Image (cartoon, rainbow over all chains, first blue to last red; front, side, top):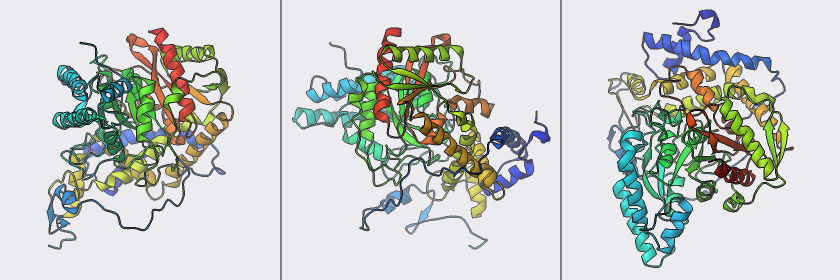
Amino acid sequence: MTSSPSNSSITSAEVIKVARLARLDIDAAQVEHFTEQLAKVLGHFTDVDALDLSDVQPMTQAYPLANILRQDVEQPCLDRDEVLAAAPQAQDGRFRVPTINGEA
Amino acid sequence: MASLPTTASDIAAAVASGSVTASLVLEHHLAAITARESDVHAFNLITIENARQHAARIDADVAAGKSVGALAGVPLALKDNMCTRGIETTCSSRILQGWKPPYDATVVQRLRDAGAITVGKTNLDEFAMGSSTENSAFGPTKNPLDLSRVPGGSSGGSAAAVAAGFSAVSLGSDTGGSIRQPAALCGVVGVKPTYGLVSRYGLVAFASSLDQIGPFANTVYDAALVTEVIAGHDPKDSTSIPQPVPDLRSAVGKGVAGMRIGRITDLPVGAEPEVLQRLDDAFQALAAAGAEIVDVTLPSIEYALTAYYLIAPAEASSNLARYDGVRYGLRAEASEVNAMYGATRSAGFGDEVKRRIMLGTYALSAGYFDAYYGKALKVRRLIADDFDRAYTQVDAILTPTSPMVAFEFGDKVEDPMAMYLCDIYTIPSNLAGHPAMSLPFGRGAHELPVGIQVMAPALGEVPMFRVAGALENAARGLA
């Protein structure tokens, strides 16, 4: 069961692109599944088109606070060994990752 | 033997006075866990040995005549998205399974300092995304009142822990209703404080402009007590409000004489008839207690769900980018780093989390940002403006917490929109940043509890607890 493309606000090609941007590997069956579900959720957003929002300021904060700074003094931070102990791989006090850009 | 105290305030008073030991109270709760946890599955982890050691230390302090905290000996359960140093914190996700944080959340530190005894980490919908705990990677929690039904979510384990007597109080987090909705479905009290009242330091982030930590409890007074302990400015959270903690406990018994309580005339439809009947009962009870009921309109809240389901996923897609297999949690082995990212995230995240990450990534991507995310933020402003207008007329507003009582497993899990509608009455307060709480008020279909939501303006916890206290009084007459 898939929704008809005319009702879809997102295409399977866009889902594939978004999955790549989000670093998610998804297979063909999942592409179809997610396209249908995301189209359904996004479809509800057309309701908002009924509103005139031209003079409305976007709300970017739940509670207005500004310029929250602390004193510029040294403070203890997380223990390096404790942090590295939780990493999948560490070496010489650093996180170890696989090859980047084909370099060994 | 005299029966043990059950409320947090009674337990703390009894332990502090030496009339009951923290260890005895703890064993009583551990016995409840032993008897029913295999059916309920409220916990991802039970920390029995730590709890016993902490209780013994409290008892030693009391015996030595030292002063103990406001929650001395009170058994506490923590939602498993709050960091506990050296103790596994998973967010009910395979991507964090086994992770032991190198620090404590501020709320964890404050509760421990107050003498609360952590008995375990509770189950949730993966990364707090869901309304039933069915999205947990470790299996759902069941509603202690009816094991064939969901406890709500995402803080379902924390609600179930209090409802089942596994702990006297618990903490949850609420991004769109994740404390209030499970509180309603499990018949307990649940509070989402004003955004910024409680530090989010050490709460694993879902949607940073909406997330807020709050308590579950059996009574409104206990909820006020725990809120006071965890509230207050924290320099480690730049969104923490630098103001003193209000006296909430004294608000609980103050009554509502002279208060103005709002009834939303354009409340979004879809609630079960019994739920709407209990809402009417609640208004009548408040009127009888001396409050004036005033009709208010909130024309934009019909768009709240739509705005929320773009804003929350957008923030989530950014917050969850950190799970890349490098610094903590799962890593799927691959020969090259980009392949490792994709393999790790695909293996580590469940379907609902992937769905929201993709929705958010889409809403933030080039060409769609203004059409979706930008517009959603403007709708958020309209909703906040609606509330501001309403709160010139009233001190608090009442709605149902959830449109329905606890539903059966599998009812909504295949239809994301049906699940999202569970939060239709709770989401507006998150968007506005306002406090709101749920308390049990009578019963609905299948004799299951109905939750009534009390909403108030930013930092309006005092009027909110006044109203909740009066409703709790009235609810005793319904039982």
